[in-house]
Amino acid sequence: MRITRALISVSNKKGVASFARALEKLGVDIISTGGTAELLRKEDVPVRDISSFTDFPEVLEGRVKTLHPRVHGGLLYKRGNALHEQQAKECGFQPIDLVVVNLYPFEATIQKPDVTLAEAIEQIDIGGPSMIRSAAKNYESVTVVVDPMDYDLVLEDMRDHEGETTLKLRERLAIKAFIKTSDYDRAIGSFLNREQSTDASFSLSLPLATRLRYGENPHQTAALYGDFDQHFKKLHGKELSFNNILDISAAAGLIAEFSEPTVAILKHTNPCGVGSDPDLREAWEKAFATDKQAPFGGVIVCNRPVTEELAKAISEIFSEVIIAPGFETEARALFQKKKNLRLIRALKPPSSEKTPQDIRSVAGGLLVQDRDAGQVIDLATKVVTNRKPTDAEMAAMIFGWRVVKHVKSNAIVYAASDRTLGIGAGQMSRIDASRIAVWKANEAGLSLKASAVASDAFFPFADGLLAAADAGATCAIQPGGSVRDEEVIAAANERDMAMIFTGVRHFRH
Image 1 (spheres, rainbow, N blue to C red):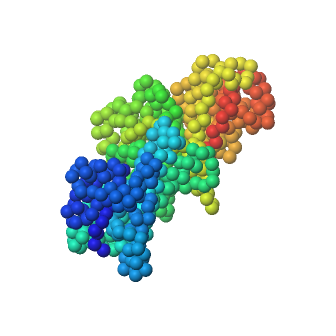
Image 2: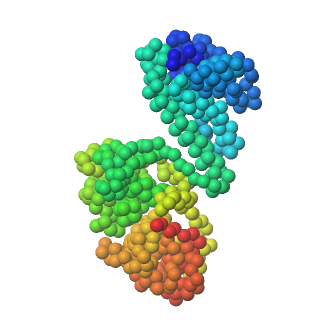
Image 3: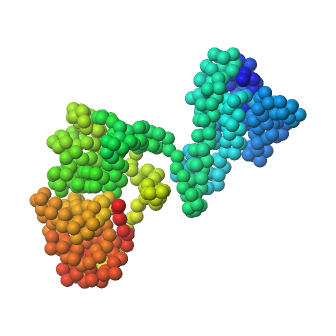
């Protein structure tokens, strides 16, 4: 299958000129389109326009140029098949033995923050995928290249086989081509499905990032897909485990709630403690004071570069992972003495991540939902009790509300204006979650007097609120919405508590 004619039409022009020049030296007739042809001429590579090959002009602003029987006939007819050979001769089909195509940059286009639907649609390639599929279907005779990284591989094969490519290489490149067009179509379908607000179907295709040693437990196999490495960079330590990655993602989501200097400690994706302070060492002390037992082997996240002083404090306990936007030289050197500690640099602010969907596997399918980005504004207008909160109480409620969103349901958080005081997570009963949070605070020697209590969902009965008042809370923030809201409000008024109904629930299953 000697290559005598190639059709080259690429949007990513990296390396294409040198590739085409090498093909020409091997005696290959080169046909090209639009901007690719223009580039090759500038590089002194002999090239024929597609319009001279098809005897039909490029029309509709380039939308129709390769969608022509002479292109697809030249790709699809079976070499050596008497009927195909006869009909190809009658129709004037000249063989095209090599197709070099990469597609309009649809996926890069839709990543632009202000892209319009019309702009995205213009970047849907039609002729490119059609040529790729035609060539790949006839891989017994035709070589198809969709990745510039394969240019040298094709040239080497041709030089080793007197201008031919091997069937093994053509087959491999054809599989790669079909995967490419499949991923491309899936990206288009997912984007349009989202933009047009339909739920006709859901599809997702992500590249393999790395295979993991195991999943949540050693008997489970696991792998990571996507571009996790574009968001986080490991600076030191062992390879990340399945559970490390889950914890890192949870930590990034939690710390994104805070603009002030903040340190948070997590275990099994649940916050153990969160503290804010202009002095990062003080922020750490506040977070750590919430629970001094659970953080062992946990994950620590900071939204400021880690200082040497903070590193010294953190190093006093064993941690699995530390995440921050940066590390001072002395801090990094100190951490790197611990070979089992994973040191992670956050490459992007978590709030900049374009992750609109949360996906969970279920028996027989997937659950897909928008991520919980619910925000509450104008809290002062949402007070439902006779007494309005003081400024300090309002600050404490806001702090608690930021944290409780990231605690597994049923969730209760007791907080001051700059720190957590007690956290109860993942209980079947909300009153039990409150009891655990109070017990944790008592174990840590922290007073809940004048604290705020935050609940991820409404108090179904007054008993949960009364338990918080008995523990020392003077204000509460919760979604509201219970059929017994009036009873709960009345109980708050009887205890002279201030309470806010946010109208936003933060269940986290």
